[in-house]
Amino acid sequence: MNPRGVKKAKSFSILVFVIVVLIFFLEEEVTIPVPTLTQGVYLKAGSAHIVTGRWSVPYVYDWDADGRNDLLVGHRMKGHGYVALFRNTGRRGSPVLEGPELLKAGRDYIDLPPEG
Ligand SMILES: [Ca+2]
Image (cartoon, rainbow, N blue to C red; front, top):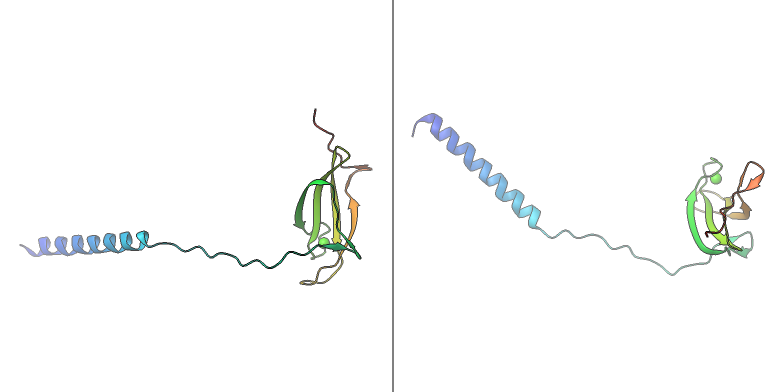
């Protein structure tokens, strides 16, 4: 075998080795960490437990851009859909929620009428 053929054979060997290593690592079982959850707690706004309407959908977002995450809850009440805001007046890592305050668009409450 000439020197050029030896060089090609070495390159081919390295390529095969890389492919074998890749196959080995790709076949390794991937372990996804399972989160550990603690017991749930009821959230409070002021001194009362937060109670919203049916089909509540919570969303954490800094609504007033003060650097503290607030709690928004979309929910149904008397057949209509509203969005309640619970402002966070606490500190980072120690939230204190106040409210609820139904959100408005202009002067009117955001109100999604019943379907049908
Ligand atoms: Ca905020």
